[in-house]
Amino acid sequence: MDGLQDKVIIIAGGALGIGAATARRLARDGAVVVIGDLNEEGAKATAASIVGSGGRASAKRFDITDEASIKALFDYTLDSHGRLDGLHNNAADFKALETDSNILDIDLDTWDRTFKVDLKGFLLTMRQAIPLMLEQGSGSIVNTSSAAAFSAMPNLPAYAAAKAGVVALTRHVAVAYGRQGLRCNNVAPGAVPTEGATALANASGAEGWWDHARENIAHSKRDGKPEDLAAVVALLMSDEGSWINGQSINVDGGWVIR
Image (cartoon, rainbow, N blue to C red; front, side, top):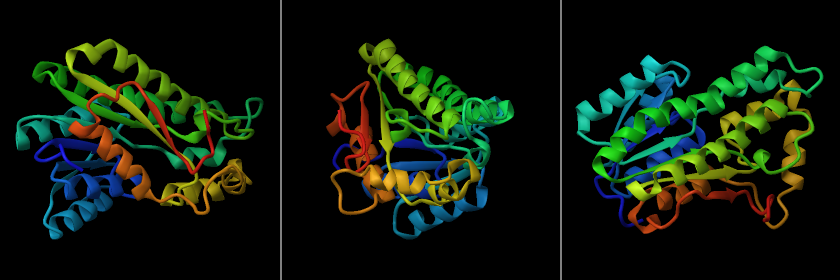
């Protein structure tokens, strides 16, 4: 992908799965990636694999629910590289999905935790990124939502609602700051067998989710791969994607067609 050389990009949730694949793809295309994750060991391993392949990457532990921790991640990035060109929000708490159930029975702690990580956390990271990008007159934010935001989910109300909220927040940022050089888009994966999706498939509150997801891949002969999402994020972060703003791009094998 052209137009990524030397761009400094934070991956907020890059230890495993889609975030790790995106970090590798961006670095392969010339970007400098800073991988933040609560899973510090996984983030360091991903960064080390990138460096070992000739790319530029570093890792820092951070908690997307903690404003001080988020600020420390951004301060680290600025101290190390002097600027911020992109933010990929990909953090999620799949553990909370084990008790996501239905609107009548869901424990409100599960509801609150899901929104705290999957929606409020994205708001907090963007509040750090946006002023920096506005000051330099450019920047790209790519959030990770889900096909669940656009389809009926009978047993994951908190997850689906939070992911729908990510879509709305993405559109808000795009229209509020687009004329000042900032772009904000969203990628919505479908059935991608990452570590988190596997945990989701096995969660008690998500019984049958994986079969349901695969049945809804209407026009694909295979499951998704993290690299499928990474390719779209790379486009949205690059200069080649500079006229794409406020969009939710479903990368789901045809699950959601609209």
